[in-house]
Length: 232
Length: 90
Image (cartoon, rainbow over all chains, first blue to last red; front, side, top):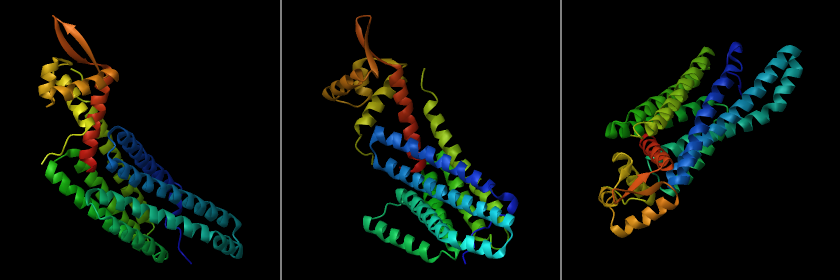
């Protein structure tokens, strides 16, 4: 049976709030990216929006699944009959498996698109990578850490790619973006280790929150840059 | 190597040149500052006038081009976009 809950009891629901913040940040940037695309018609804006919308959508799946799990967990604790509990969880397992599968696939594809924006790939490579992502995610359902390991590697590669860009242009917003991506990557390491302690799940969620707040800071700085020194 | 400027890049350069000159500029100065030929500039000027990003005024028997609030907003948006592109590597 697949282990679904890693959060300590007192943290139930709080992780959902953290994921909602991530959704808002990602959707906001995605929305602005589409707006900019309409002005400049540069396809990269569309790819960035697609990347952020996919990750945002993946969080939505995660929230729905977590909400269901917590609801069932609380209900189960109230009932207290082992047989009934077992049957309930078994029935909903398929929904959870599909839900988490979609969450994982969308997350990895979203971050892969972000990576491809910097490291341009041939079209055939995209097909191969897409296939590998689906296969890897499907066959690693019971080994949750494979998903987090994959994300940690992907996020490290994105951070390296963008840090090269920072070293080239010394742009402060790029620097904050690199740190944010590195934090989100670090959170994946903590997620990988939750098997050893549920407290690590809390640390992972807060590290992830710090990462997405960093992305939000980057975006606010970009907007501020446009507003300064305009009118004389 | 710098790539070919797109239409929106040229419009951005023209509006920024006006802003850098305090919001108003002589047409000939605008042509030099924006690196455009006379023909190209007339085409872009017409479009900017139609879309109300700029206005033509006469001061001391000389033509001047002034930027409108709508034009300032576009300059702001384009600066935002440039920073956005730099940050996210687009």
